[in-house]
Amino acid sequence: MSEVEIPEVKWNEQGLAPAVCQDAGTGQVLTLAWVNEESLRLTLEKGTVHFWSRSRGELWHKGATSGNYLHLVSARLDCDSDALVFIVKPDGPACHTNRMSCFFNEVPLPVQEDGEEALDFDQNLLESVYRLILTRKEAGDTDSSYVARLFARGEERVLEKIDEEAAEVVMAMREDDPDAITNEVADLWFHTLVGMAARGVPPGRVFAELARRFGRGGRPESER
Image (cartoon, rainbow, N blue to C red; front, side, top):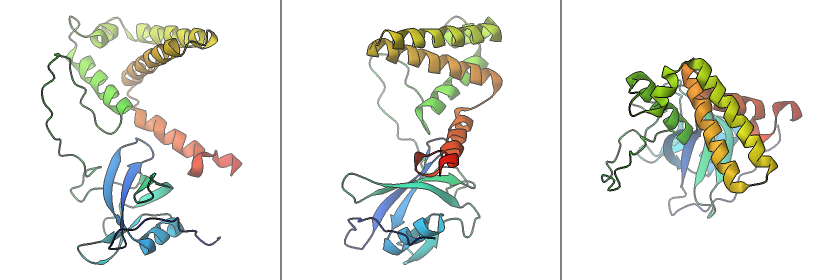
């Protein structure tokens, strides 16, 4: 194995930098902790995330006690080189509370004055829309919910909508219309999520498959 090259990080006065860990499969932000040069070197060298514990004043191999290791897929510095993101594949819950993410305490937002429903956003946008679709499907309120009406017409209609939207995406791309492409791809993604909800396939499975195919650094594993 070649020697690990440590990037030029702008460490703070304590020789530390914050590191966010993000799930490669779902895009969910899992946790935030601190790294120093040694823990960063071990993370890059060993392929599992190591932090520096400020409370204990020692290196902290994430998962060494719980078994919930964070396997490194890629690492990135921000524009100021003073913070990092580790894209990881977790073995289990990242939080000591046994939740997948440490970020579960929702901060209430002001009620929207325009009356529009706010999306219960968590993990990432596609996962959030998928969960909303499941909620509408289970509620079955065909009077107010397009999703409920779509499911009420049968799964074949859901498949027809995916087919229709895919054709409209192709048409928009042939016409080279950026606005139409944007709108039609949004329609296709949405109806594809409806179809996935009908079959019980969450977006995280697709994200995980893409991560498996492309592996470290965004290159297909077959080309590495």
